Amino acid sequence: MAGDVRQINRRRVLEVLLAHLDEGVTQPAIEEATRLSRSSVSAILRDLQPVMRPENGSIPLAPSRGGRPARLFHLSEDFGAIGIEFGRTHVRVGVQRLTGQEPDEGEILSRENLDIDVPREPDPALDLAAELVDSLLSRPRAPSAIAGVCIALAAPVNTDGRVRMGPFQAWSDLDLGSELVERLGHGMRSSPKTPRVLIDNDANLALRAELRWGAARGVANAIYLKWSAGIGAASCVNGVVIRGHGGVGGEIGHTKVSDAGTDAKCEWCHRHCLESVASLGALGVSAAELAAIAIDSSHPQRARIEREVEDAAALVGSTLAATVNALNPRLVIVGGLCPELFPDAALGPLRSTIEGSVFPPIARDMRICPSIQKRGSGLVGTFATVIDELVPDYLLSVAENRAFAGL
Ligand SMILES: [Zn+2]
Image (cartoon, rainbow, N blue to C red; front, top):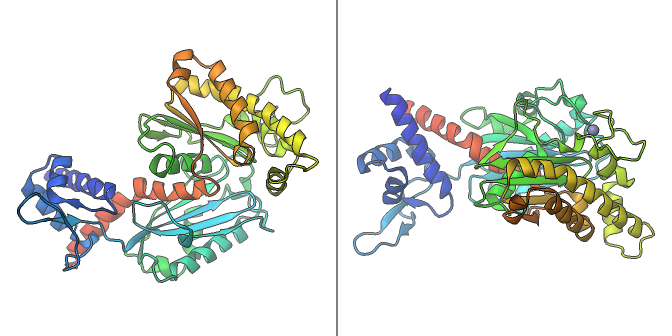
């Protein structure tokens, strides 16, 4: 029982340290945030020493009013995270040290418009991801130990990390965590323990990126809409990103659209769903073609695409309105290629349809804004997820093991 309380208190102190990754935090500030006594915090900081920056002459001190400046405590930057995003035609990876900042360009490698058919060919896609991660791990500033790995897939992902529906069905029998750890080289083997691997849908992860570093910072109730080759939504309710019973909540793209007026049927849900009439595929162009049309105002397909994006936006908005009414969000963030490349055609009709469809008090208190995180938002979200979900347990376990080993 006493051990449980101590472990809970260690986690509380660790959470304060994680909230001040870059600037550090003084012991009195930890005592205030955790409401623990000075002696308890002192003992816990000693327990956590194996995962803290070493005390030496270069430690920055916090200014204080009179008396000695207080020491600032920081978690060690030796630990880091691996993030991987598999899209339909791209693989992006990142290796980041444990910091409070989102990953920068130097920590990410991207391969776009691949010859590999990623959804149907998991083996070469996993090989490529491992190769890119290895190359990042061999860079001089790479972390020496990996605290967690998170994989973003452009597909519905169940809570057990398996894909049961959608374009990535060839990945359904894979234990992605094991497949990846097996392929990774020296960087993972030097970690004091094998890191856990989380897998989630890219819209859920993009929302986590917005919550930590983007438009939803400080917002407890938010919805993220991803509108690209697929259409999906992710929701944060009272500060918790929700996935639902099976983990696939938010798949609004597969909502049946009754007035579709088309023969288009979804390959996955076999209905006239929103995705079959309003996604990038329904526009009849590839991602690369849409990008080319977006920057060429005299492109022969420009007027058609703008008109179709406007029509599609009204359909997406009326479908999303049901989720908005159910959850009463403060913020709706609109992300994905369609609104990113055609913001005027997408955002106006989307906004007016949602605002005109939902309960008026919900519309009055709600803001609809474009995503701050652009392409790569699922990847950025993998780092936010590792920090939130995997780092605390990992660091507690490393601190315990090292203390036990007398290190
Ligand atoms: Zn469908």
